[in-house]
Image (cartoon, rainbow, N blue to C red; front, top):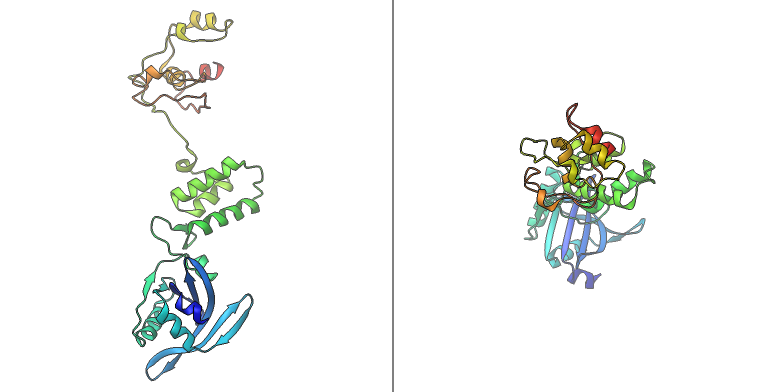
Length: 276
């Protein structure tokens, strides 16, 4: 233990009921996990009991060992989830040994499991009323997928859900999708502008259709309607016209024959898009 004391980088303190979880880390890995109870003295709060957790057991140690740990640590951190009273008590105890500590925002799930995992506005994931780290959020999402019986999801679909989770930073919004509560901001993959005033219509003679279909289309129409032209220029037949970017409202043409969802008013040509 004396060697561990000398090599501790971070000493992390987190309130659990009427005592504190103590986590000592070195090089980003947990060296050990302990439990600290404070006692009131005439000089203020001081370490009363200190136990090192090993699996399901707790080994009593001299409370002075905690003081040695704190003095040997490069930094001391207190979880933001610790109550105001608990933080004040810890700060007062550390002040008695001329030790400084910072209160940091950490993953509640990790803190409850004896792990130190600081989070920021950029990395925190909202989970109900808590904020957790990305690793815990992904594990929770995987658990929800298993519970919901989403074995039919492909690996790509699960990867997409994880990407959305890290993007929106809200676990509940993602798990709601599994319950059929679709969120347009999350389910929309792409869109083509609905503005058609500046669309240059595609001539039907330029279409490369099946020989039985081509003359029928040309006999009925000289050119396609704006919505139909947008669809063709954005890859309806498996490739986009590279020269049509400016015509299609200045957007980049799509390639690869991706599926399309065409939404427009009645009598604007959606049926023919499907037939083509």
